[in-house]
Each structure stands twice: as structure tokens, then as C-alpha cells.
Length: 243
Length: 243
DNA sequence: AGGACAGACTAACGCAGATCAGTGAAAGCG
DNA sequence: CGCTTTCACTGATCTGCGTTAGTCTGTCCT
Image (cartoon, rainbow over all chains, first blue to last red; front, side, top):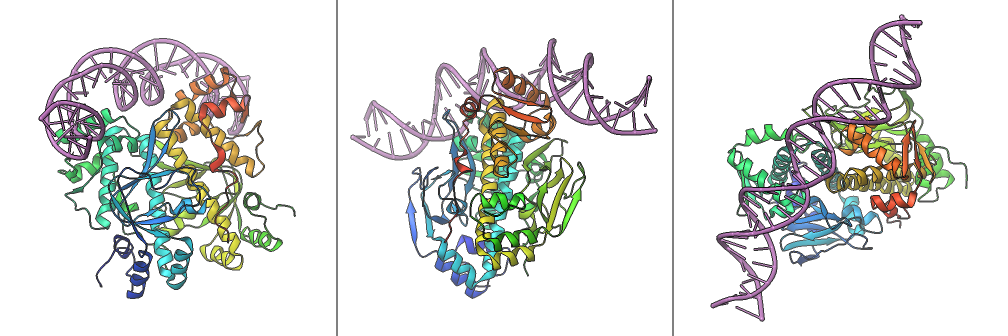
């Protein structure tokens, strides 16, 4: 296998073996690279005619604000993920996107993407598969918020992040570097920051995992998986309908 | 405008004017019509190699079960919606699908759909738009469960259902026929059935709306919209990137 | 007709998690 | 160099919602 140039190539490569040509096409999508600072929204709910991006490095969150001032983070994006792909189909974005760290991202215009799909159809299938996987994760997130208590929910979420990061080589079974604050985690989990803190302490004191100093460390992976009822099969080993 | 044959045609037609040819292609997708009784799952989480369907009549819910025995309903599907479209891309379904009423649905195989897209590309855009809209609704649902209290959440959900039903001619601003039990509503909203009952009583006593005898009736639409912070713009008036 | 069952509805009680109100440490900055 | 801001962390109190345990209807059986 040739060297994997980008996180996206690495992610898709974990699912279909990519030819040199396909890798080259993927690389070309990364031509218009841009850098954004942390904390400054790159896309706003209601905004029209924005571009889509492929995230090359750094972390991002997509969220919605409510009139009461609270917010719900729908998902975090990590290297190799698309930003605002769905919103491009609508004229206006249905959520906002904020970089959590300084990020590097490549602007992708719809025509370029369609072009790439035409020349390398297997890429289209792979990208569609990735999009479906993202959607499955949003659904799993919904289920967690609706029906899991704070401990299960937190554990599940951090395990899932780990699984995603592993795909792009940014995590091991031991843990991963994680730039999230407890506030961000709270907004993602539908909890208060105070309660997130308590839950993290519980998990730590139970010897299951730690979330400290910008790093997530799994001490008892199996125990965590059991507590969270984590089933990675919906992220794993599942290929699309490739014919 | 020609007569609209199916709910799907009606829904897509609300967004792009469909030619006679496109209508014919849509009709053809409905050739393999099947009937399913209420309460019997037509698709199971973990099941492999199932087909996708277009719902022609009746109501359906897609849900996930948790080990504790509770379940979370991710979404209800109404006539004109696709069933299991995303799960076809994965080898195995990531959720279960259960008819709430007796339903009629047309089996659609992936090749047929791709064929239809090739002969009428505008149809592909329209279907993609519909899929994006569905995803946007799941996101909105997630936000509701995470950050809205029971009253807002319930009101928002029933308003959204109304907006969707209006698109296929099954609702007016006054209300709509609704076969959901309070238990189903509870599983969708991440609440207990008991509390759903309390909330519905509150809404009724506040003169906002009723949910009784299989019908939802809006008495104070504006008041409800305000309470729920309901913004239908993400369902309305928004076209896809049509070139 | 009587029994079984599903669904709407209610009251009493308990708890998970929100809210409020702080402390203390580290990092950015004029 | 203090000053401000951000973040982790904690205890006390409050509350929205779950849980339990019912009653009452209507409808479908046989």
C-alpha cells in the first residue's frame, strides 16, 4: 500500500483499498487549503451559499443555539471528516460550525466533488459510506441523550470518539489526545458542566477512565464498554454495497 | 399540473416541478407494492441484506432498543418517506422499523433507484434533498431531546409532524389525524408515558392544542410556535443545488 | 354477556441532574 | 507585574421528570 497522505484517505482506505489514481484524486481535493483560528465560527446557522470543507487537522464542533441561550452540540468533527456537506444541498446552513482548535481545512466545491465521483466511482461509494456512518453516529447520539443516563452516555460518547479517532490513526485502545473542555462535553451530552464534572470523577474513581489535561485514557476498556453498552459494530467492518 | 399519483411524487413535487416523464419514473418505482400489518417489524437492527421501501400509506417508526428494555424512537415515517434507505448502504441495518398502522409500501432495489437517477437526474437531486431534509429533522430532534424541556419538546415535535404531513396533503394548519399512542410519543420524545400525559394535559388546558381520539388539533398555532421556538424554514422553501 | 387487554389518565413519592454559589489553579496580556 | 479570563472542581439546594401503583374507559374476543 502506498503512503496515506491525508486523514480522509486513511479513513476511506480503512474501508476500501484505494488505487494510486484514487489517492491522487483525493489529494487533489485538498488543493485549496485554508487555516482557521479556534473559536471563530466558519459557518453560521441561516447563512447561505457557503462552501464545504474537508478537515485536515484540528477539531471542530457543529451546534445549534436555542433562544434560551443554551446550545446543543450535534457532533464533533475530527481530521478526515467533511464539514457542512449536507448544508451545501440546502441553500442555507441548518447549524453553525466552530473550530475548537486551530484547524486546517480544504475548501471543496460541489462541482469538484461530483467530478471526482465521475472519474473514480468507487470514491463516490466510499464517501457515501462515510456520510452514512456519520448519520448513524448522530442517531446513536440521539438514542444516548434520549435513553441513557449521564454515566452511560458520557462513557459511550468518549468511546465512540476513540473509535473514530482510531480510524485516522489518532487514538489507540489506551486513549487519545482530546482538546475538549468539560463545557463542550456538557453541550454535546445535553448535561450541565457541573454534572459532567461529577460524572468524570465517578468514572475516574471507579478506575474506568480519566479525562484530564487534554487526554482521554482508558484504564478498563472492557468495563467501560460494558457500562456504556458500546457496540462498535456499527462503525466497524461494515462495507457498503460495492459492486 | 398533472394529477399527483403518490405521496412521494407530491412531496418532491412541492420542491421541483416534475415533468410527465419524471412522474412516470416515480410511478414505476411503486410497482412492487406490499402490505404489512401493524406491530410486526419489517426490519430488524442487525439484519442484513434487506430491501428499502417507499411508504405509500400508513405510519411507521424507526427505533433502537437498549439493553435495559427501554427504546428510543428515532423518527416516524409518513407516506412519501423512504424506509431503510441509509441501511441499504451498510450491510446490516442499524435500527429496527415497525409499522404503527397497517401500511402499504413499495419495495425498491438499489439498482432500480440508480437507474431512475440516471434517466432522470433531477430526480436524484430531489431525492437527495429529501434525504437531507430527513437528516436535518433527526438533528432537530436531537437538539430537542438535549436542550428543550418536556413542554417545548412535545409541542415542537407535533408541529414538525404537522409540517411534514402538510407536504403530502395529510394535514392543515388546523391539525391532522394521528395514530400515535402516548406510549409511542413518549419513546420518541425520550420521556415516560406518564409525563407525556401530563404535558398533553397542560397544553390542552392552556388552550394551545389537543391530542385526542387519534387527532391532533391546533387551537392556538401561533402560541404553540412561540412556545416551541418552532422555525419551519428548515423544512420549507429551501431548494437543493439544482444545476 | 363476561373476560381480557390496550390506552388514557391520575396521585404520591423519590431521585438524577439542574442551578446557584462559590474556590483555586493555570494561562494570556496590558 | 498584577489583572482578567478560562477551566476544573465542589457542596447545598431545588425541581422536572421517572417510577409505582393504581382507576376508568372502550374495544376486541369467545
